[in-house]
Image 1 (tube, rainbow, N blue to C red):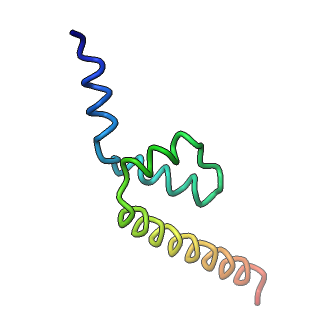
Image 2: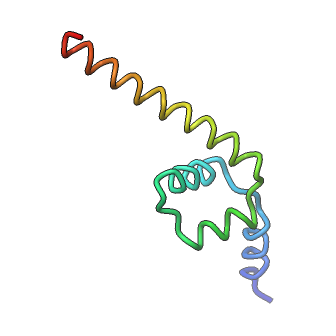
Length: 78
């Protein structure tokens, strides 16, 4: 009996790691999420984790855009 099927079974039931969550949220925000990753997220991920990381990523994006606009306006002398 080989250990590969058990390892694959454990892998398929293991919750997503933080880095995997970040990659999935970033790919989803950019609209480039693969079908395999989407299937993995729905089978192993918890919705609350995606909501929290997505909300934080959105706030950081808005703050980054606002900071860039303020910098450009400052450099333009406005």
